[in-house]
Image (tube, rainbow, N blue to C red; front, side, top):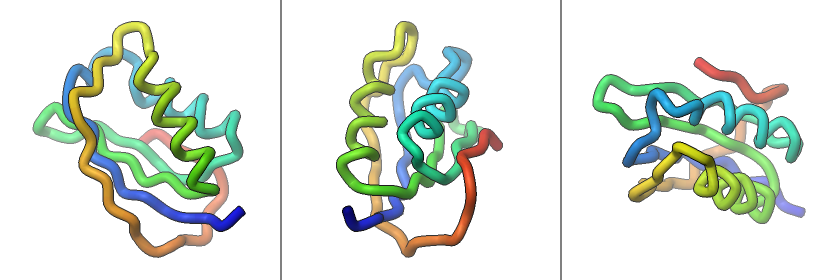
Length: 89
């Protein structure tokens, strides 16, 4: 499976609901790398890398979070990076 890296900005009820820690748990369980952080404008930014089908699985599972409500996502494919793990910033 070919790896891709995506820069994603999540809009909706995504801060104060465990979004970043849920994202880290799901990404690690799928073997994805990258990071996630809160932004000043109440959005959450993520860079995630791995097989596209596993990234899609991460996004589907995030949208089923108990308190998380993703209204929309701005997604852009970006160059791959060499990194290990998935972190909360």
